[in-house]
Image (tube, rainbow, N blue to C red):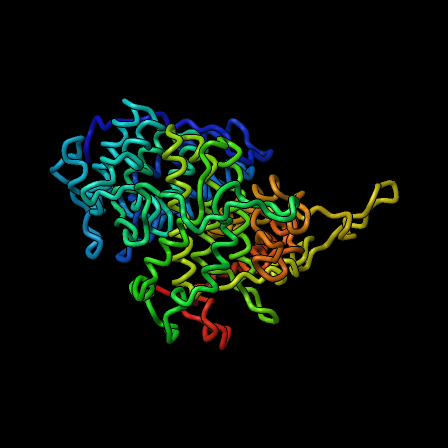
Length: 506
């Protein structure tokens, strides 16, 4: 394969959690394994085009304090899946070398074509070397030249179950310029995600945006427009947003998207998305509030969309929305332009709403989310008897912190998504764990009514409760519990709950 390829240093900085456990050995090991992944593996594998999650798994575990030997085992186990960097024929799995090189003059020519991933990787490595990570991100994701004439780089960035966004999120969070180039290459070979759902060019203020303050100053509201929780409530009430009927348990995800993007739903999604306004004049405070809204809403959707009296199910695609939300703060910090920061935020709402639609419009049950324990413990836990000299007793729930045990177990989970979800919930718990009942932005409307039944009782313990559900569902594998699975039944449809044996979307 090509010699004298452009390269960037593989160095990393610590992540947003930076839990104890990181050593020089773990840092060097993580950098070495990530470099090997970049140089050996394509971003897709298999005929369907599954995403390569190896770098996600490594960095999530690294941030949670995984030892070097465990990082190596993650690489050895998951590194078997991704295809060679130069596999150009998915059906045949054949390797060949492209004669054409991607450059500044032709880079838009090959968008959406996975066989050009190596060329894009080289091209964006050169661009990041020359312009730096932030400027290159601005030029090739947000600039008009990157989105006109069908280029749609921003829509590619939020496509593919938001994997390019997540890849870039890891890159900027951990300060890896090499991964920035990798994420841009991955963005370039994705299809543009449903252009009919987006209206991001001007984003004029919505005529439906509330202009008066809440009657109760303790009920937090956005400074401008509607809250994300309020918008979800409107999506639930909208006749246009009703799920496509009848429910088909065998439907492919592509078929669900095609059916959902009809009968006025794209126009309704554009209307609802415009209600989430970004008040740039507030600066960092506005960005922080929007991140907070995303993390509360996606957590409630993931763990509050089950059915009472039934075994919890955690939707595979709603989980991706939670995992992506974790990276929004790092992305906002990396994007140079204030306008582009606002554009990134606005782009998340149509994605969230269309995934809500293709999952059957699952409704948030805030009471269900809060019914899960705030002190989750692994099965068959054997807590040693505390010595008489100890202060307190970890066997008592009111004296027990569940997070250390959750982290200690999830490091060994076989599915990267599980580690990533726990990391997102840990981050949210760090920042919003002290929130009082009803303290989430948009929990109430302007008249003081709950936007979702029971949300007045939702407090900052939501995130540890959610983490417990994730562990119970996906498995406390270090305690003898078999690894579980994410739900792919499209659980918003009532018929998806007729039995507990569901089929995958794909």
